[in-house]
Length: 150
Image (cartoon, rainbow, N blue to C red; front, side, top):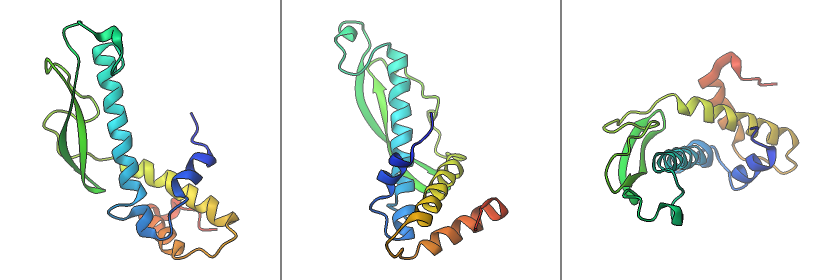
């Protein structure tokens, strides 16, 4: 599935500075959290065999049991996530294992997507762009000759 320009434009619509993109509360960190939590919910649904709040799961002996907090670290810094639980504690995550605190490799993929989005938007943007050059330069530092600066 391709990520459409409309989706990327929606994600980036309120970004005004590089910090809005890659800062402590920037879109990169929020998107990472949302994707990790969504994947974990999908893992839980697969484990239990039914969607959350689906009557098909009534009286099957195991069910969703809320979430618990966990902090993981990666290139993005520290990130608080909500990990789904089941009543019998038989659910074992695949994307973030029990006891795992370090999570790497994901930032590179998200940063590449965001770079391409910013680059496309910057080419057709009609309003003045404040400090996007700093964001583009940061991408160039991270990815060297893989970043098309023309």
